[in-house]
Amino acid sequence: MESRILPVDGWSKVVHFTDKDSGLEAIISVHDATLGPACGGCRIFPYASFEAGLEDVKNLSRGMTYKNALGGIPFGGGKAVIFADPKKDKSPEMLRAFGNAVNSLDGLYYTAEDSGVSEDDMKTIQSVTKYAAGIHAQGVGGNPSPFTSRGVWRGMQAAARQKFGADSLKGLTVSILGVGAVGMELARLINEEGGHLVVADVNDAAVAEAVKRFDAKAVSPEDAIAADVDIFSPCALGGSINVDTIDQIKAKVIAGAANNQLKTPDMDEALHARGILYCPDYVINAAGVISVGLEILGTWTNDEMNRRIDKIGDTLTEIFKRADAENAPTGAVADRLAMEVIENKKAE
Ligand code: NAD
Image 1 (cartoon, rainbow, N blue to C red):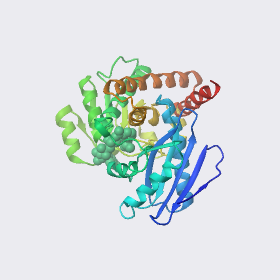
Image 2: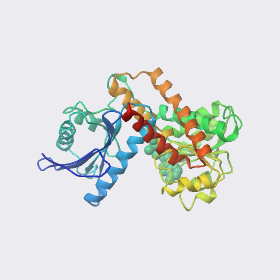
Image 3: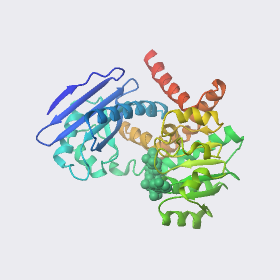
């Protein structure tokens, strides 16, 4: 295996790995390791170019620095990409070579699942490196979706308190776009609390289930974004808040699980300008990384998970108060708060 360090300004360590025997080409990017070893998933994707993969892994690893810092876990931000088509090119040899690449960093980076990497793949990677998490051995961790739902629900409650002065979601209406693993359980929690639901999904069976179980109103995905509701909750794919949809949004709060909800960074300011309270996606959907973090630390229990997840609401409240005081968009405030956590650690 060959490795070479790529000099990248502002990133702690970025390494390019190539292994002719297995066909592996990968980049591991450690953005910041002030809070602890970098932790973040490995993505397998057929990038159009080396530059495209490098750009992606840089951005993703920086995002993990913020996410881990505000998730309250002692890990820095890192990410890995493997240049391959997960459907065609992936092989046990390639995954083991990647595990060896992770190993060569001596614990500076812990890897985990991301798109293109299955739980079985992680087991193969783990066969050669102990710096691989999210395998859910011995019943620890497990499927993070119910925890993510709980985190989004707690965040939504915090936003409702801030925006509407509401003690709970009772009587409020929430539009959920995507009633999959996270969205369905979120719907259950909202329904249980006395909230009303509007739901949309490309999967008709999921919509029918939500209608039956929670008396939800079914609408099209476009109408879910534009619904005349109190809260919009994007729980499908990213990018639902964009130049085409922003002026249709009538909800005063956005609180959902999807990654990269804002298609472009300027949407943060655009939501702020329209008086819409946005719960930064990486803060409200952090339960999965919290679970991985506790797995690595060996302190994962159901109670500890719930205790940490309930803090997501407190973190968001802090972000909302600051954003209010500074008349600033919540996404920008969240990034600054994350950097403060890191600067404070450096000053210790
Ligand atoms: P999922 O695949 O179980 O559910 C997604 C749902 O969205 C599905 O029911 C799907 O049919 C629907 N959908 C897809 N495209 C759609 C479209 N164009 N319009 C309407 N509906 C559409 O996924 P999930 O685990 O529930 O995750 C939901 C989102 O939250 C994803 O963006 C995921 O990356 C993010 N997320 C999930 C977790 C977790 O713990 N599962 C953690 C962090 C972030």
